[in-house]
Image 1 (tube, helix red, strand yellow):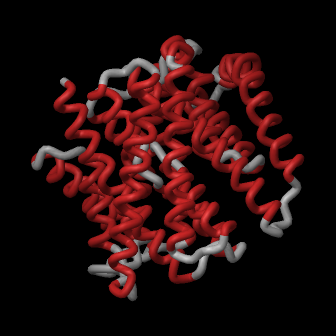
Image 2 (cartoon, helix red, strand yellow; image 1 turned 60 degrees about the vertical axis):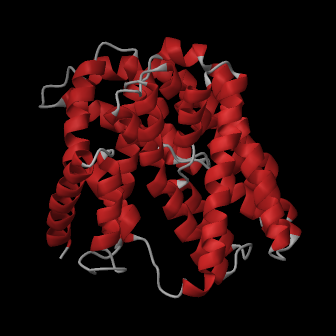
Length: 376
């Protein structure tokens, strides 16, 4: 059954992506929408399984690894201030207005704060693909977006640990912060000193495709330890890509990883987001879904956009950066699952937020297309 599902996903995602491009939209939009069509909500041809979920996770890890390989480290250093402004702007507005929305909905203080933190999450895996399609990934705007997303995720995860420790969750706050500091310190040191050495030594082994294998080993190890320390696997993969980007193996690895990724894993990731959509029983909460979706979109767009403007970007570029930060994607899905498990979200609110997260993910590519196309 899995083999047939993979075949269906691949043909549907490629055809839908091509159709999306013909209609003047990024290919990733078609891939997201076709996932909804294939999933249980419409045709029911593909269902979410543990294996499909694992392939999807590999897809997003490889996508962010590729983004790291394409990162210009000098440009990344120059955009550090801008990324900080955008990152915190993209946290403050959703957190504040999400908290107010929770209070209006008669949620408790902790539940309202959790809602604000969930809306503050950012997942640029979708934005990365849209930026690549528009040749904007290596620009100052693209580098700022990637840096801001890393800042967003780290700050939100630490803030979530604070919240859960105060709300009665079994969280050792000191250990949470220590693990994250340890990961980033270790990742930077290993990326600087060990990664080039490892690539040189591993490439000399008398077997086939040693270079690409060594790159994937680095990618998956970084992703694992990032997830183990509570940072996020995609951030570990991105840092691994950046570490390899300054070596002489960059171009060979990029070409081969891109081939592997876009032939199977990345299409599965994009399509699986739509497959996870569940629309049963949400009619009675349609008004709330619309209101929270508008709130989620506007707070990121305006908050991150103002941060970009304060960092010296034009209004047009600021709008493009803000739109790229709108997608909550798999990061918010993970946080929502934590909220449900820790009883900071009710089952009804969880179902509502899953749809809201999906809406923010779907609207991001066309918003970016509109702004960056006009910018050109």
